[in-house]
Structures are given as C-alpha cells and as structure tokens.
Image (spheres, rainbow, N blue to C red):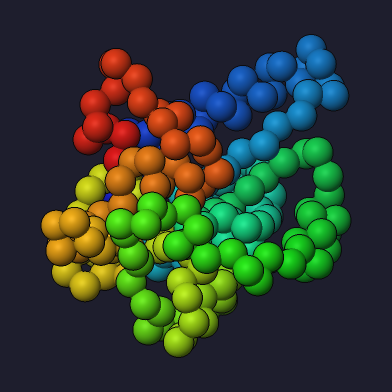
Length: 199
C-alpha cells in the first residue's frame, strides 16, 4: 500500500488477501470468472515496505498493465496498475499503444464561464501520459486524491481553478471533478454524503 508506506504491515493489506481468497474460491466453482483489479503504481515507490508488498502482489497476480487514464480521454491524470484475466497482458499493451487521446480536449470544456484553470507550465513525463503541452490550453488536471489540500491543489498548484466572481483560486468543486472523471455532475450528491466527503 503506497499511501502510508507500510506495505504488508498496512491494515488495508487484509483486503488484498481476502480478495485473493475470494477469487480463488469462486474460480474453483466457476473457472470462467473474470476479474479486473486496480491499484496505485507501487513499483514507482522506492520505500522498502512498499516494494515488499508489490513483490507479493505480483506473485499472485503477475505483471500489471500500467497506464494513465489521461491517455483514454480523462480530464485528469490517474496513473494506475490494472490486472485482469479478460485478455492477455500483451494484447492490452498493444491496444494501449494504439490508443490516441482526442487532441481537442481541454479542461475549459467542463468548466462554467465563471471559472478558469491554471496555464500549463510543466509537462508530465512517462509513465504519465504527456497530455498537456506548455503554452497551450490545459488538457488534463493533476491526479485527484481522497482528501483536500493535496500539493497540486494548493498555493499556485496546477490543479487550481480561478473563480471570477470571488477573484480567488480554489480546488475544483465536486461537480467539476465528477465531470473530469466522466461522470455526470451531481453523481455523488446524496443526503448521506457530505460535500467534504464528495471531494
């Protein structure tokens, strides 16, 4: 688990072992069971415990498909590992190789007319997909995380949105994040979910 850097000691690791047991059990009953598993790219984290965790995950699941959702027309970077038994890894890698992002996509397309995004001053390098080009309109936001105030969304971070009415820079609203990830605005709007939790 890359987040806390605790690897196999992370309390959440139990979820992985339970998942493996469940897949094994169901496949013993129905060998044609298909699965898709997604996780953070732990191989890019040099902390020792995280590398131990990643080695064990590969032992059970094999090599992952590593790709950035921005390559597939997302309005936000999301570099993730994917494992599946629905197609061979080589086939998925080949399909990804020939996946071309729509060059006309811009973050401004999902903003209202009272908001603007930060200009592009830096370009991501592989393994992130280089969707943004310095000097051109922003095509993707940085990766969204499960908490407010991440580095990319504070100070003069590239993920900030300028609100013309208040003349302030702020983190994208839940609605803007929903649109960026391909959902309808308001998808997470529920009486039992607070606005803070939606972010």
